Length: 107
Length: 123
Image 1: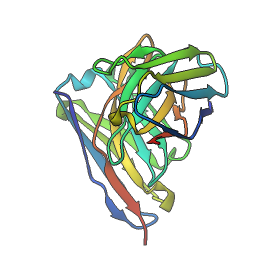
Image 2: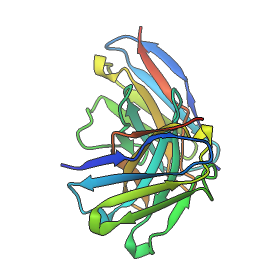
Image 3: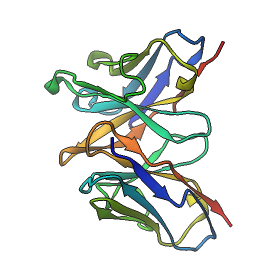
Image 4: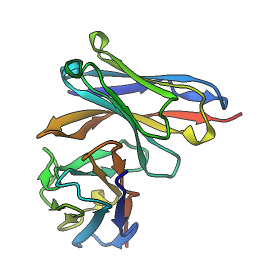
């Protein structure tokens, strides 16, 4: 199975900050990597698919990059509604797996 | 508007069974692969399994943690997805989400999700 390791697991930042979350795959997955945002008690929301394509309706301050084993999610200027938990997901093969999550909190 | 609504969760004893349903609307249900994802209390997301579409013969895939105990099925005439779970264990306690798997360039992403239904396994 392909393992995804996110770093950091916890991130404290302020409104207006630029933040980057990293997702590393245990083997190459081309660009078969998606990013989701989850708020407490809510379903996950798709942000980025195929490593770098912004899902319709998602603000342009979110961006993704990477291929192979190393991927990043960047939020260029944090807004209050961005404080949530973020997950990467690979869809290269079965079983599909998610990273362990990165919890982004207000400093 | 796309909507996916799960039902069927509740409290079940270890060793028991449960059938979850997900009723969808707002899109051509039969065109999509459909997945189940679960989240244990305070934990991360865990993929449970998938049912593909009629063109594939409704192929299913499962996570190792549920293989042999879970059966995913669909009824395209009723826009409904199902998850039958047998021999439930305490570690199956989670919120279960259904998700629409959008297929692009040979790979999927989960672009719509239900609100989730809680399954608690306890004596």
